[in-house]
Structure formats: structure tokens, C-alpha cells
Image (tube, rainbow, N blue to C red; front, side):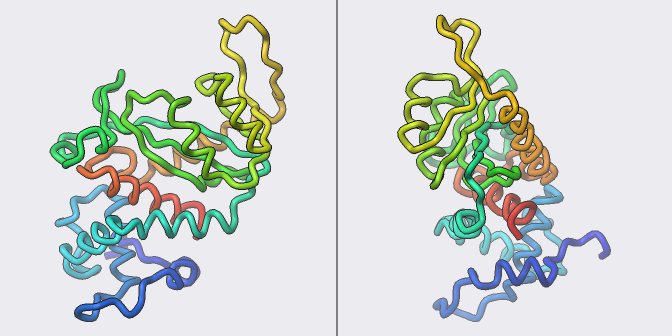
Length: 250
């Protein structure tokens, strides 16, 4: 089938060194074929059981994704590749809503499912930091009703060598500004209209904030990112990490 996705040689060369070796049990299916199948499902929005047979048994594709998600393998791969290549002298922070479909309900864990009510209904928020050229290198999830400024410290703590941090008015809080400065960074965040003291803004640097919005747009080209079907937050975060890897880091 001509519309199937296959990892090319360059992409596979970036991923292959991370593949686990000497695993117990029966010899597993070909890693490159299985990973191509996982990416195909994420891009097309297929149900796992509808994954084309060219990638191998659909149960194998899903089990590989699910088991390695439980072990944080996919998010760990993103962290390893991104931390080695991210240029953090200018970092942007933002979040985007994702609609949680009916299939995303019923997973164990209560609030840890990262689904919450917002204006768009029940949603999940994807939070991210992007580097100077707009590549996400830190990603996280919260329920849709969690404020951006509340989620920000957890992301910023994972950013080494922080320079300028660019965010919109949703991140205008004295505590967050102090945290950024304590880590050696400089906030580029416009002040809210109700501030008594006007906050100076580096407008030239602030213009580059569109890069993180562009990054979210590219990630949502993956149908299983644009709409959440996964019951478990860890699996949806793994899907976000894999999409980020494919688009920006391999």
C-alpha cells in the first residue's frame, strides 16, 4: 500500500541505538517495522486493531507501544535526543487544548488521567517548551482546566542552560518571573492589563513566540494527537513524545 508510513534509513539510524537489547522472552518482531506501524497509527488516527497487516500483527503493534510506554521508554527517548541537541538560549513556553473523546474515559487513576473540563468540553492540555528554532524538547500533560502558569514550573525545572523564556500573558506571575531569574534566565512575558506597575517587554524577542504555536500545529497533523483517544495519560504523553521525535528530532 502506497499510503503506508515507513521510517527511512536516516530516521531509523537515529532511533536504532535506543532499542532495548538482550530482552527476556521470545525473539520480538522487527523493531523498525513495528515502530513504523506505531507512527502510522499516530499519523492516521486508526484504531490500534485496524493497523495494516504490513506492519505485523496489530496486537504486537499496540503491545509494544503500551508496554514501552509503561516503562517510559518513548518519553525517555525524546528526553535523550532533545537534551543533546536543544538550543536553550531562547526558550518559548505555551500549551494547547486537545479534545478528549469518549474512548479516553474509563482509565484508572482519576485526576492522573489528565482530563478536565474547559470551555471546549473535557480536554487535555499539552504543555511544551521549544528551543530557539521552535523544536519541542520538554512536553507534559495536565487536565484542560489547569492554568498554564500552574503547570509552568514543572517544565522550567527540566530546562538546562535557560536563557530568555518567552511566554504570553498567561504566564505573567511574580513567582514565575522570580523562578526564571533564579535559574539564570530572563522572562520575556508581557504584563497583564491590571498590573499597577508596567512590565517592560523585549518586543523583538517576543515576536519569535509564534514558533511554539507552529510546533503545536505540526504535532496536531497527527490525528491521534489532535484528538485524544487514549484512556491512560502515560500513553497519550508517549504519543506526543513520538510525534515530537518524528517531526523535530529525527
